[in-house]
Length: 198
Ligand code: NI
Image 1 (cartoon, rainbow, N blue to C red):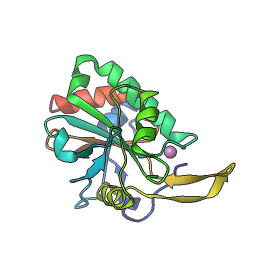
Image 2: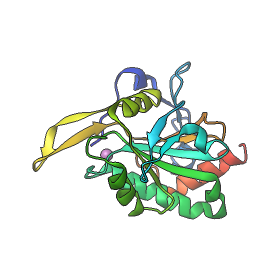
Image 3: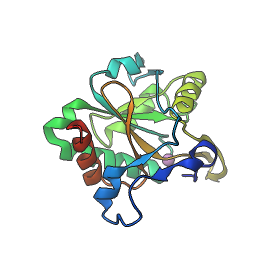
């Protein structure tokens, strides 16, 4: 489930002009957080093998980060498919990219569950979880909205969560923000453009 963001993200704007109808141009332009709002930063999380992983472990590579949860019935699988398609299209350049899926539901998403889940999409995907404090810290840093939903699916609860893909540069700083629904081709094009500094 995805919610339209309120609060700090209310100021998110399209950098492209209104006349931009080509999906790729739109994605290349990307969206940006309101001026002065920092997105991202240090994190300490746990990988599927139970090892502690921090943002510093990815320095020198690009990070393509998505937040969601393995029980998500709709948006998360779609987004992770797009990430997998983008990685495929990047070819060799994908070696420079770490695709990362961080859970907003650490209670159910154990390290092992995350490992199993991401493998369905792409072997390169890194599923990260942590204790509730670690998840709270990283979602705060990335300005992610996540909360238990009022609606349920059978006996299981759902999570409402914001859905953006974050492209972080080799220095760990935000380079682009993709809205939900951005396709693999657009992702690959935009990542390539960012890599070549355009
Ligand atoms: Ni989801």
